[in-house]
Amino acid sequence: MKNYKINLLIILGLVLSFSCEDYLDQAPESSLDEEVVFSTFKNAQGFVEEMYALVVAYEVQTHTFQDFLLGDDGHVNREVKISGDIDAGNFNAVISDNFSYFNNHYNSLYGSTGTNSANVENPNNFNRQRPGLWDGSLRGIRKANIVIRNVESAENGGLDLMVNATQEEKDVILGQAYFFRAFFHNEIMKFWGRFPYIDRVLIDDFKIPRPETYKEVALLANEDYKKAIELLPNDWDEKAYGQLTFGENKGRLTKGTAYAFQGKNLLLAASPLMFGNNGSINTYQYDTQLCDMAVDAFAGILKLADQGYYALASWDNYDEVFWKSPTPNAWPGGTEYIFSAGGGNQSQVERFMTSGVNRELHGSISENISPTHNYIHNNFGMANGLSIEDDQSGQYGASDYDDTKPFENRDPRFYRWHIIDGQEVAPKATGGNANQRFAQLWYENAGNAGIHRRTIFDNKKSTTGYMWTKFYPIIDGEYHSIWNNIIGQYSGMRMHMRLTDVYLMYAEALHASKGATTAPASYSLTAEAAINLFRNRAGIPNVHPNIVANNNKFMDELRRERAVELSYEAHRWVDIRRWGVAHEEKYRRKLALDFPQDRSSFTERLLADRVCEFPKHYWLPFKADQTQIYEGFPQNPGW
Image (cartoon, one colour):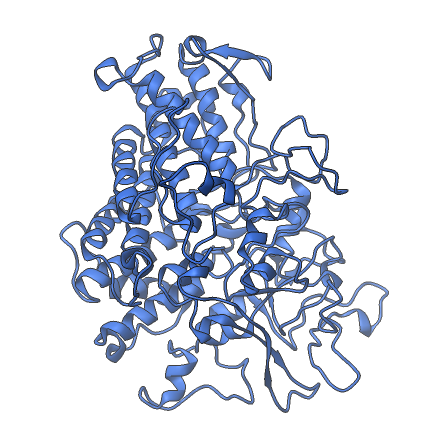
């Protein structure tokens, strides 16, 4: 029997932990053969835990700074970061950059080579000892296949080695493995496109042709998600095996998790880019068959929400989704939590939480991701519920937008998740002076830039005229600062999936298939009603009836709502590519907003005109050696 080395990768970080030690009473680095690994539930779950540890946390995966906003939404003030390579169209640099969550982080902090930080023996504390998305996903697929081969019954082609386990225990082990096999394929497919679906433990038979279409791979993943749904529980705390970690099971896979990712897999496959299969593309054209399947999958988790397993956060409690733990030692995410990566450590999480805010304010070690003016202007609309473009069009009544006062009368979410010029963010320090009040001074004039603006060469400062604060603690109306150092009490976390995302994807898939006002047979909610849930939460009017009546216009509004609600949560680059719009000027140009001290005028300034050609810059290139091993694995177009 072949031996496999079991690395006990504890999912670390703050309260974000569930320990493999609860499941595997063996010393770290012990070598166990398959019969031992899969003989009991505890041992088998210990092996499964490693797949949780291979899930990439986009926001804390890299070295000392998290450059994870890769679309038109963020601008990093150092072009050596991977978002700069993406802006320049240099995707080969992206897949080899050791500070990218795509890569394996082989090099140490001081530039020495040969040390693989994905190996837990790596002594370098700055590389966080976890593989990147490509390598981690391949490892996860292999581990999932090992589990399935050894735990499945003989009649299903497996070895049925879990002889000392109940049927429920076997089911949950297999359910996790089927989920992860699909999930890790999806992680690769989001960035590289169609990829062979590996459904067995590969030994020498690795020459698997690349599929012709994205859809055929997505349908194979869909079958695995369906199996996971059958086998996983609604809640681990409700099961006997879940009593081992009762009250600490929030991060574990459930039936709802599988429904949500089943729907996402199908929606992505239905999207204009994937539906067009690298040919011509129409941003409003979806695969309606896959959209219908996606709606039914999302309906599965929405029904669980109706039963009380999930719930949308209220406006008052929305911070619990991003950084504020509702109870001591609890995960963030609140009632919206569906799935996230674990891992990281205190300093990494703090760097992530402060990445949208200038170092001058919080005093921590961090560079700066500034939200672009174009992203804010195009998506964060007005208090009347209209986009700025629609508000100014004259088609929906008198305009509320004044381009000489661009920060007024805006959507409440604009104020909740940003710091804007003139906003006081910290009180006067005890014994300090007026210069220590840190009111935002982002004006630009001939010789005097505001304290938070200055030059792009100073990595403490905003380059765009805004800060984003979605994961940045604010207590009793006061933001964390060098005088109010409360950030260590909280754990910001970007989730792979939360309930708001489910409703948004449900609405998109449903509208693409049946329109804005028709509910499916599987659930009673229309796309229009789904989107209005978020507008009602924020206190803005429902979507205007004239917009609802126009199919393309309503799809634009759905996408704008998604951009607002999921802002700075690392979905944007995937979205603008799958919609087939990333090469359009509106999504290429990154802008700053400049203004004098008296704010008498406002000028847009071009920071970057992103190099994005269709179809070349819609998929990352495979490394050359991947496409040269054997025939039948062509490179992505343009590379």
